[in-house]
Length: 153
Image (cartoon, rainbow, N blue to C red; front, side, top):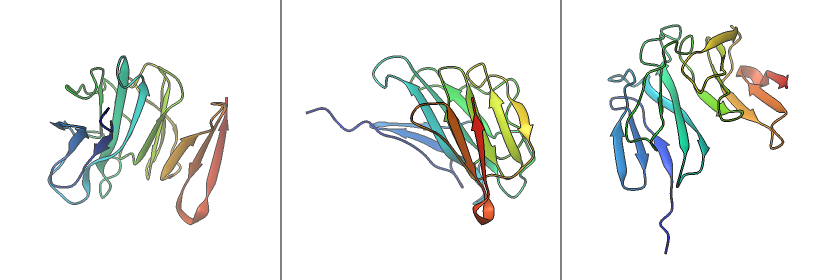
């Protein structure tokens, strides 16, 4: 029987990545209830070439970029820090394709076109969740009070 393959992140006092039998400390800000990892996105084959990107930070200091994101190219065994991270706390992230990602949070929306190494702020509007349509041609962002935005590629 093949074991269930899952990926989870934790925040707060300890920021960690969990995958099946593996637990890895994340290089994100941690130590307070408002800090750590909040979301992850994975792209590729979980048994082969898989990219993982994690976002978070400190939602009480939502413009601080230090320790708000990391990525892995080896299924979460080791973590790298973006050269230009997202512009503050981010609570949601999604891969649009192998190299393009969108992340959002209370201090704005960022896009990366190189697998998460460099991020560009595209909006200072606050959103809590970002999701891609199944066909990959539309992205929805949802914020406080039911506010929504739609990006169409």
